[in-house]
Image (cartoon, rainbow, N blue to C red; front, side):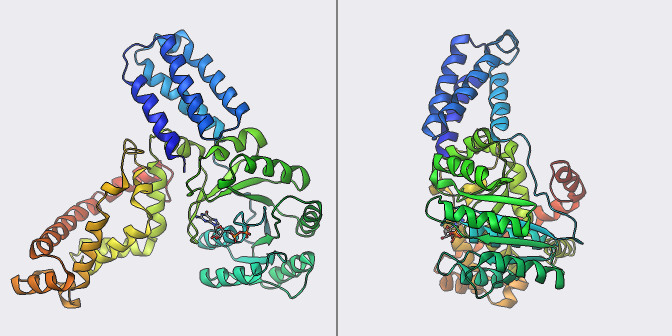
Length: 444
Ligand code: GDP
């Protein structure tokens, strides 16, 4: 999502950023292009106007035009305005401590991703040490209950469901159970409709009154564009929402909804859905998303993403192996698979400042990774544990087995040796790295 708009911004910034002096006309042209880019991305017209006028007003002034680096100043203004548009600061969930109950109510139209999001959120909060109960109150969509039960068992979270047509009864039952079995976090999946209708709103209001949620989050489908904004407004009027989760942010849509939601509804986007998988839910950080949109990358999310794949224990084990020189080809294969798990290369590269929007996925050596994996899989466990025994005969056997060549096997072994040395160095520098990451808001 948002790639198109990023390309446009990069173009605008490239043309204005390098200039040693810029005129009022340059600023106006740049702002015009930005206006077009925002409109093409389906951003709400009023939001675009406000953004454009404020940027123009600030950038036209003497302070910018006469400054030493006017282009950079201009980019900074656009960046700050974009952060403001997206909601300034990240708004976390307002949950109580573990000895009391916190209820999260998920609302939204049918198909918006409520059930999937419920399980993602449960997975996330469980990993933060909370004891989570999922509650199946979507008794309208066929199979929604079963879906939640299956998702719950996949992520190891209990699901409460009852054989009734009354969602309020299920909700009350869940609260009683949570008390009995000391669950501290209760996530309630509710029914949606294809469109907003009165009966649905009444039902949701009754569930809301029964569970008295700390968070009532609207799950809005990013693919619906501007409609997501209207839906958010209606749900807020009728039920009252505390924030929005924008699902399907990974889709190939224009992104206007993300950019308009906060300004129009006043409700913060708290999370974005980035895949169908349990780990595909990211906190929404306006600053980081703004940087990503403007092609400046998002290194902090990248670090966090890596931290999500590597848990603390694994990281320690890896470090131990590296310091004791026990890092083997088996571990290398493991790393390769982790890389794949982190998501598509393109989405990762887009988070790196300077590379955002500039890399064509076709040019990334995904094929190379596949070959490496094939080579590693053609080795015996003994070989993977001790690469030094892989002499010429073994090399040609491995090449045959993996459908590659001896040269490619040689290349992989060289690369392995090199990364071993490099990682060893990195471990030595780890304390410096830890400090850096703590400073950037990563997990300690
Ligand atoms: P509900 O009717 O609101 O409960 O919607 P579901 O949870 O069943 O989701 C509808 C469809 O959207 C399912 O196929 C989900 O897998 C998919 N989906 C939900 N969230 C995301 C997301 O963030 N990214 C992608 N790619 N698909 C999603």
